[in-house]
Image 1 (cartoon, rainbow, N blue to C red):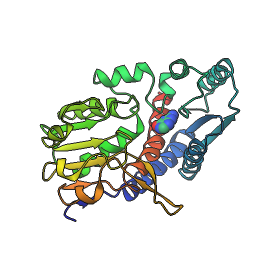
Image 2: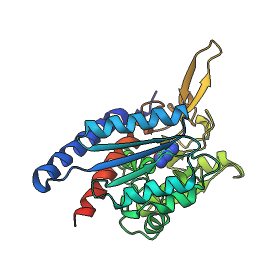
Image 3: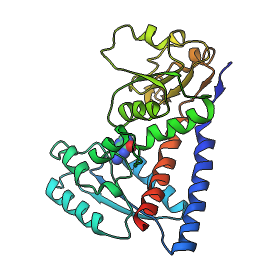
Length: 288
Ligand code: GUN
């Protein structure tokens, strides 16, 4: 192993401590406790795990957590009604509706119904537009966590060539915007990209967010690249057990990269820590 391991778990713990300090400060100076409302529709087990973790960490940081678990048959009208109430509630500074939603609910309508000032996911078109035009805004949590780690471990970002593999609204596209804002030269690749290996071979920074286990091979990488692996893929070990792996083939990549995030313990823990940070940011902006 030659690459430096980017310890997202430790990084996230430090960020959560900073958030908790900020929360305590807000309570002392303004008598305000930031509040995060998390809405879960249905009983998808993976979503339940994420939501539970968000709620626990919100409380540990000293914030209020408001939880809404709705049955899977909840109508879009009822969900929009709840969001309208949360938008109007002064104790709620951040609103997160866990995705994906059931097929009978239009995701875009739900996202657009959230007050952009409370949109701690940074998914509302107003916030997406602000990010794309270089304005201060609430930024999606996963790419925000990736950028924090790149700033710490990726050296001077200006002028570096970053290849983002994946073009989702949640990670790939906002990641590209954030790297542009850092003066990187950014290429967004995806499942239809031709000759991905030689593209990746020219990258100083690789962010993999394709959702395919071990997709990016170590031999594709340029020596000394910084590698951020957003993938969380559960694979069968063949002995009734499963294991979490990333989108990057860690075992081959670690000997070529200069720094790399492990899976688990890399990007994953940063996402919720950034959600807490966004909730405090949203709260502060609502004070003024
Ligand atoms: N589902 C998977 N990731 C996310 C996320 O970052 N935010 C929300 N709201 N749902 C998700």
